Image (cartoon, rainbow, N blue to C red; front, side, top):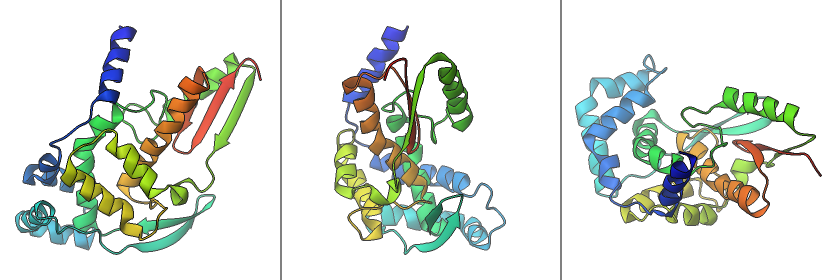
Length: 237
């Protein structure tokens, strides 16, 4: 069974995916994305404006995507302290948050299959609780624990490196153009905005390269990552 799962994972890693853009831009997918994006926000005025004009606004969004005229809206920012100081980037509900959900409706199963098994952030069936539970079990099992984090991770993500990583798995030209536009929307060569739904997945893809190195080049058998925090376990130094 484990061997079959490994074979499927290897096949998924090797495969490059095309013909995804039309699925993302379809009106049916945009409706699903709208319903996901509005969760917990149904009383907000801007959400209600879209809900009252749903058919027209989703049709307009569909047209802007297929014509290549969609561009990320200007960001608003605010600073939070939880507990570290972070600059949060905020995009409008329409069109941007709907677009991000539409993209991930299609790409989540593609990208999820590429991920290191013990990467626990923003993945269905994973999460902080499961990662913490396994971490505590490993603490009892191993003599040595090395806990690390990537300093200022999201602001330091290099756009060109991220694009190359994405191109290893996706060959759909229109989708790549859309993702490139979103990645470059800060107008800087680095920085993936904290607060964007897509940014969590961009970060996971970026650090999946680290996961592969730790597991396969360094040969660390027990290793857990949650976003930009990761822990290595061993019985020797």
